[in-house]
Picture 1 (tube, rainbow, N blue to C red):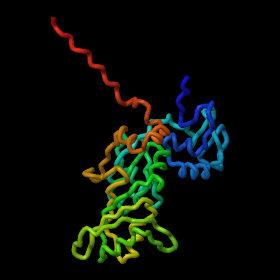
Picture 2 (cartoon, rainbow, N blue to C red):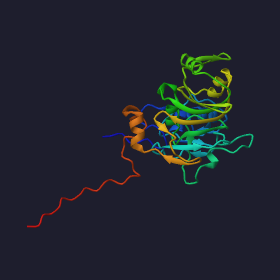
Picture 3 (cartoon, rainbow, N blue to C red):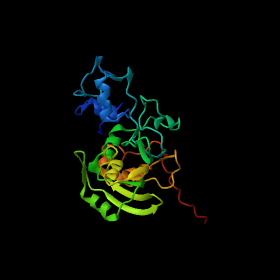
Picture 4 (tube, rainbow, N blue to C red):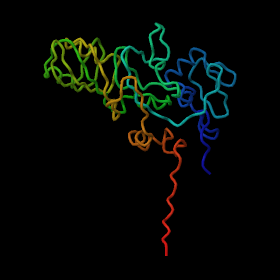
Length: 279
C-alpha cells in the first residue's frame, strides 16, 4: 500500500524524522534559514517545549507550534514571477519602516517568500514561492542558473575590461565568480551593460562595476535561470505553470517537492465519447 501523504509538512510516522527547520520550511512559512532564526528567538514550540536550537527532529505525531499556532496544511509548491519596482525592500517587515515587497502583493495571494532578494533600488524579476524548501533550492548557486541584469552606469568602460570579469574578481577579500558582461551602448555620460552571474552575492553587480570605475544608477534583473521578466508590467505578478516548473526542475527535484502528483486545482479532462454513426 502507498504511504500516506505528509500532513502539515511533517514526515509520516513510519518514516525517518525531519529537522524542525526543514519541516517549517516545507509548510511554506519561511525559508529554512529564517526558521532557524525563529527557533533562536523562541517562537517555535514542539510538544509543549520551546526550542532554543534547530538541532531537533520531529515526526508527524509531534505537535509543532509557531507563534502559538499549528503549522498550516502543506500546499503543493507554486512559483510566481513578480516585477519588483524600485523603492521596495525584499522583507516582510523593515525596521526602518520602508515599504516592502510583500505588503504590495495582491490580497488573494497565499503567503509567499522570495527566492533570494533584490535590494531597495534594484528592480526587475523576483521569484516568489509558497514553499520555503523550494525557495532555498532555487537560490542555491549549485543549480547553475544564470541571473541576467540590464545595468545603466555612470562612467566609461571598454569591452576588454568587461571581458576580464570572466575570470572572476576579488574585492575587499571577497571572491566573486565568473561574470559575463557586454557593453551594449553609450548614452551621454552613461553606459548600458548586460551582465550574467550565477552566485548573486550581496550587491555584487554594484561592487564589481564600482571596481571598474562605474557608478550604477539603474539595475534591472531581466531573468533568473529559465524564468524571464519579458513584458511583465512593473508591480505585476504572474504564476508559473506547474508543467513549466516541473520541466525546469527535472524529474528528481520535482518528485522531491511533490510536483508530480495530480494538481487538485485542475479538473480532470473529460473523455470524449466516440461519435455514434447513424445507420
